[in-house]
Amino acid sequence: NHGLTGKVAIVTGASSGIGRSSALKLAKEGVKVALVDLKDENAEKVKQEIEQIGGEAIVTDTDVSDMKRMEASFNEIIEKWGRLDIVFANAGINGKVEPIEDLSADDWDQTLNTNLKSTFLTVKLAIPYMKAQGGSVIITSSINGTRTFKSFGMSAYSTSKAGQVAFGKMAALELARYKIRVNIICPGAIETNIGENTFPNEEELKKIKIPIEYPEGSQPLEHHAGKPDQVADLVSFLASDLSSHITGSQIFIDGAESLL
Ligand code: NAD
Image (cartoon, rainbow, N blue to C red; front, side, top):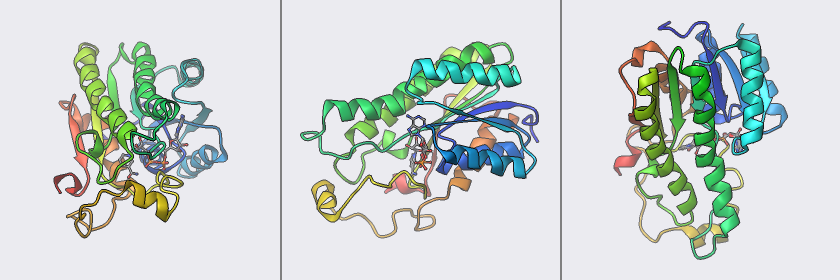
């Protein structure tokens, strides 16, 4: 299966959505998967799902924006499996949805730290363990890292997602000498939990809606949001030797949503 069997992966944001689907997909391909997420019971559920299909996983709870806790997680993983080949830096939040004039500095920091600083930490901490044998890093940005949202209130999110693209490209350049590939995936709307509690009520929606018409069916290809499993297929491809000549690429997976 294109070099995946026996490899070790770390997947952040593995309890839910794109991270969960990708962790399952990699495990199916014979990859041992470290499930990294905030402490809750969902990561344990994903671990059980992986074990049910004969795969191997460990759970390590951490806040991806916290250097000390991330170091501890990496230590746990290396102690357990002694190597690291695949890094999926995927954890993220929409953050507080507020127009810039109302957004607090603390809310700005929360989004930037969770989405962007975490990406730096995840990649930085992986390098010592990947540089001997090479590997694949995949970063989840968004189509909104290179274009604007069709609503107000997502300036911090879009900035964090654009930062991930720039960081991923710099990392691809720096880490090529270690045969570590780095690619950035940019999903459009995907059916996950990320929107929960983001847009609380009609009043809030009115405040952030841009007064222009948004075309019917937000994705030309399928007229509905994508599925986490469809993103997981791309993650598996980028983790495998099938993508051995692809690095520094920004790959849209959005049913042409970004072209609207
Ligand atoms: P999700 O909410 O289903 O999953 C995100 C996971 O990240 C959750 O399990 C959450 O607990 C975890 N997480 C959040 N903050 C964390 C922290 N500080 N430390 C550790 N874990 C943390 O959302 P998803 O849609 O699967 O999101 C995954 C990635 O995809 C995010 O980076 C998101 O920005 C990106 N994305 C999502 C969409 C979409 O429409 N769903 C579109 C484009 C990009």
